[in-house]
Length: 143
Image (cartoon, rainbow, N blue to C red):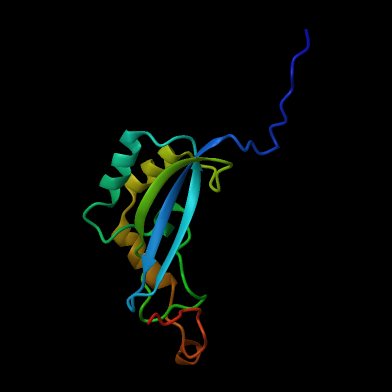
């Protein structure tokens, strides 16, 4: 009897992952969306725990849990802030973007201090100089 060997370095397109969709709206109402996927499945309990972790706040600050903030440019303007909203959680097939499981991500969100993370972002992300503000930062005016 022979046994099959599976190559663990080859991505498994049938692997379950959980996509978390984020939404960002700056002070001038410019909008961005993005997503990150995590390994595993989304149990109803973990989805509720994620909702509870961000309830009562302005949303979440991605940098508090190891994610990048969505932004229009490399420089910060007066309209920018670190707050993002989770607008979707969806199971799908494919390799995850993040090595953590969805449950581990939710654990980190439950422990996060969003206000402290926002203050840290404010400190670590200085405003761009006025010369930089005049450059095209990728925002388009919507009519």
